[in-house]
Length: 421
Image 1 (cartoon, helix red, strand yellow):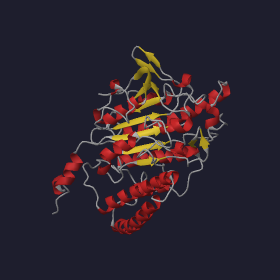
Image 2 (tube, one colour):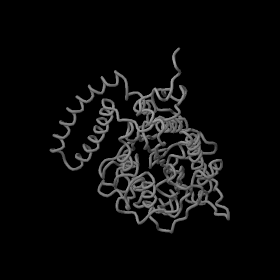
Image 3 (cartoon, one colour):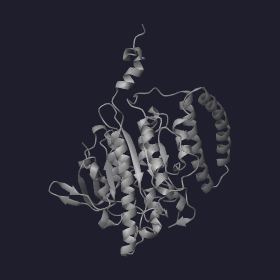
Image 4 (cartoon, one colour):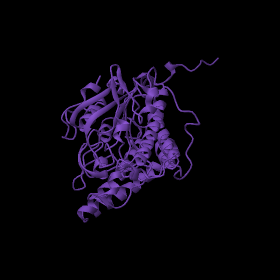
C-alpha cells in the first residue's frame, strides 16, 4: 500500500520554505487630485478618533489602519506633487530621487520572480504643466533620478507578466530567444546613446531601464531564485482566470481588476513590492457612473468652494476609499499560516496634495494600513507637527520593511516614531 503524502517526503529546502515566517510586503496606493479637507479630516476622541465622511467606508476595518496628518509635500502642481509622493523630492531638471517602492525592491526583489509590479488605470498624458511634462504624473515609481517606471494599465498584459512566463519548457525556450534579442538591443542602444543629445539620452535611459527589467525576468526564468517561503494557501481557479483582452470601458471595473491582480501578485508571492496608481496624477477621469456626478475629477477638484463641486469631489473621494477598503478586506482574508496577508504588509494610501483647489501641498491625506509583520502599530490618528516633511513617513515605512538607513533621499528629518512597534 502507498503511504499518504507526508511533509517529510518533500525536499528539505521546500519544507523549510513552507514553515518559514511569512515575508513583509509593501504596497503604495496613489489617489490623484487631493480631497476636500473638511470631508477628510478625522475628529479625535477620548478613546481614539471618529471617521470623517470620506473615510467612513473603512469603519469595518477600524484597528487595521492609522490616519497620518500634518505631513507636507514638496514641489508645486500636479506633476511635481505626484512625482514626489514616494521620493520626497521635487522633480528638478527632469530628475527625481529613487522612490520608496524601488528602494525596498532592491532589498527584497531578488527573492521573487518579479522585484516589483507597477499597476495603473490611465496612459500617460501629453503636454506640459508648470514646466514639467504631464506624462511624468503617470507614475510614482522612480528607479533612478532619471528613470521612471510606467504602470501597466492593461489587465491581461499585467496578468501575463505576473503569471504566464516564469516556468515550464515553453517559458524557458522563450527566455533563451529573448535573451539573444536583448543582447543585440542593448548593444545598439548603448552605441546610439553615445551620439544622442541630453533629452534623448534621458529617453534612452528609460528605454534601457525597461530592457533591463526584461533581462531580470529572463534571468529569473532561466535561473529561478531559491524560494525562502511558500504561501500556505493558493488562489482558486476563479481567482486565476485570465482577464479579457483590452481595457475595460467602465472605470470601476478597470480599477477593481487591477486591485485584484495586485492582491494575487502578493498572495502567490510573485512579488513583494507594488504600486497601484488608481488614476493619472493629472486625472480628468469621468465618474458619471456615480449618481449625481457629472464633472471630471480634475475639474471638480478646483471646486472654488462651491457646494455642488464639493459634493461631487467628496463623492469621488469616498468612492476611492471604498475601493481601498475592498483591497484591505481582501488582504485581511488571506491566511498566511496564522497571520493574514494584511498583517504582513505595509500599505500606504494617499495623494500628493491635500486639496486640489489651489494644489495645497500641506497636511497630506495619508493612511497607513497593515503591521508589516509586527513592525507597525495601527488604529490611531497620528498628528505630526505642522511642517513635518512627508519623507519622514517614507523613511518610517522603509525602516519597517528592513531598509537600514537614517535618512530618506537626504530630505527627511526623522521618523513618524509613533507608527513603529
